[in-house]
Image (spheres, rainbow, N blue to C red):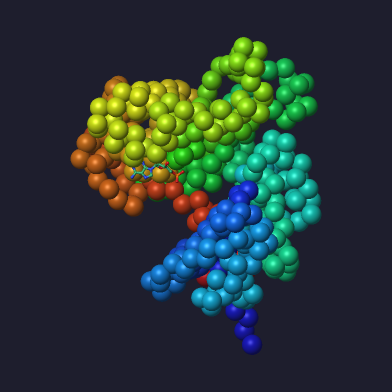
Length: 411
Ligand code: AMP
């Protein structure tokens, strides 16, 4: 009997109380199923499963307590089996896991073994929220299919090419090295995908193109990509540094922290929550959804307007900084929830930058579409693009490239 060519990859993104998943067919990158388990460990857990095979069918929902990640993954496996896509299928080639922190060590997607698990565990002090959840997802998936290759795709990997001039903080070297304090960057899978797609959109090879990528979701980061290689990014030791985000402050004077400790009598944990959860757009105006902020601005709300202005001001500073880092910029690419959908943010971010060759065409900018597209006028020196990100596809492709049987890969 000829063995079945394994061409499917299950992508798992395990958070502390959630698991997002997609099953993809790597022959054409199509989606066979997608879903989400949320509020794991609570009374009100929910599993939403969307079958996408052959045009798809209605989503199925389970609302019942799901105690832990093992139960969650078993429930996902049962849903997939119901669509004839069970985890025991010989067509499943691998499971690709999003792992947030890979430190300096993991520069590439990696097939997971005991040594890899140990290293991801060793990185917990620099990613206390994310890596433990990622590890739980991996360990659970390994117990469900111990024979199957499991691949870790790291959020930090794309940024490991940053030169030390960009990745080092200007603090005492010995202290920094002892505690692994440096700039790692995050959202790397998205920056990799979007910078490559942008080159494709320009009809050029990634090696020829310099791109500034603005990943503007609830979390937000910018990157400077020279010839397909990341040379700087705005997030640092943790995802707190850089742009103004939905709930994170981005850059602040580090002395703000000592000040709040000494004068505000706040603890380190309280300030951690303040800067990560209660700052950014939500801290400035009480809303972190750009749609709501725009609606309030349209009604003349001054607080929402100021939050928007601070958000855009920071974006502009990073565009200017990365323009200088790259020297020559071929494209500026907007992606993620805000970047893909909020035309006013795109317009405001490049307003007044005509001298840098940056401008958007009002009409092209206001078109709504799921397609990658250029929104600058033809004469513009720098292409401004909207490029929908697809982290799951990127994780699946990186995973499959590592594990695919050669006869399939080369077919
Ligand atoms: P993400 O983290 O990439 O899923 O992005 C989520 C964020 O995108 C939300 O918090 C909103 O601020 C923003 N967003 C999503 N849809 C829109 C839209 N149509 N217009 C403006 N902002 C949007």
